[in-house]
Image (cartoon, rainbow, N blue to C red; front, side, top):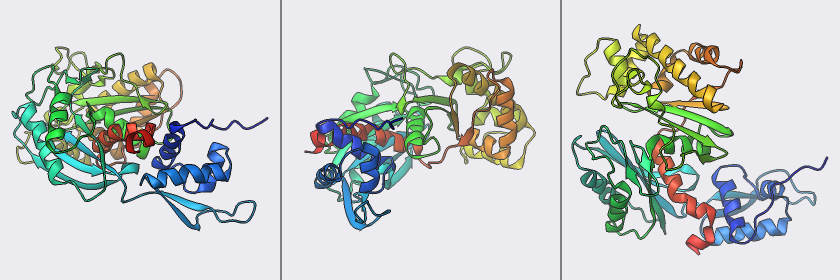
Amino acid sequence: MTEMRPRLKRGHAVLGQVLSLVHLGQVGTRADLTAELGVTRATTGAVTGELEALGLIRNDTRPGGPATARGRPSHRIALDPDGPVVLAAQVHVDGYRVAVVGLGGTIAATTAARHEAGRSRRRAVRCRGRRGRARRTERPAVCGAGLAVPSAVAEPDGTALNPLHLAWPVGAPVRDVFTEQVERAGLAVPAFVANDINLAALAEHRHGAGRGATHLLMTATGHRGVGGAFVVGGRLYTGSSGLSMEVGHVTVNPSGRRCHCGNRGCLDVETDPIALLEAAGREVRPDVAPLVQAQELVRDGDPAVQGVVERLAAGLAGLVNVLNPDRIVLGGLHAALLDRDPDRLTGLVADRGLWERSVPLVPSALAHNSLVGAAELAWQPVLDDPLGVLG
């Protein structure tokens, strides 16, 4: 039976296809690329040469693998560390972080600051644009900007529909505000905005714990609340208008805490850091972030942890039964619960599942996955058509 090879795209798209393979770390030499695409060495050389001329990759003549049939050593292919970058930013409940990110998910420079919880969305996002301008490097080009926010973002309008903990009004035009601030920072580049957990899942799928998964489910906590995302075939599943996967409002305890949505016992208020602290009878200390305080309880083995684990397992099992993922990535407090007792959480999810098989549960691997995901949004036009964007 003849082996099926990926069809080489034509025109500008072939450059994006090759750049994506290098960006995701799937090829390291020209021989790898030739085998992956099923083309001649001359074609591979021409394509990589064009990407090198755009300042995106470097061809290194040092041997990088086994010799070819004619005995020639294969050239190494690597992303150009001095190539273009994008600006990525993330708004938290109590602060923000801005980064300069290269291809491959590499954070070249980053900075963070706190802000008061009641800051307006325009003032909060304005900080991102100004700090981004201050942190621009001497690299030759900035290709785009991406922002991660702790809210569902409706498309195509780019509005935040449930910024519960940011004192923003429902329907805040975050993409318009971010675009305005990026322009004020002197960057004539496209700007993108999306939900922070969606972007974390995208980053983990491309560069972290979700690499190789076809149907990737992710849940995570910040200081408050629970978010979720689903990546299918390398693309985020966002529903008809960008509002899918509000997993925080899956009911796991019908007689539990009142949720912001009006329901009781949602995952959002039963398995986040505040829920664990309240179950343990602890006051939320103002000098330490709630997530850090909750992680301390997990490490100490507080008895309240078991109840949160059981409710998390119930929620994950329901999502597994609906979505049938092949891997689950957990972030924030959920990752800490998994690290504490991976067999227990995995077993509880499997026991409640319909399919009599265990889905792998893994902790998130990237330190700033929402930032890296915001960068992926900004990089996507370049990955789709490098010559059209940079040529």
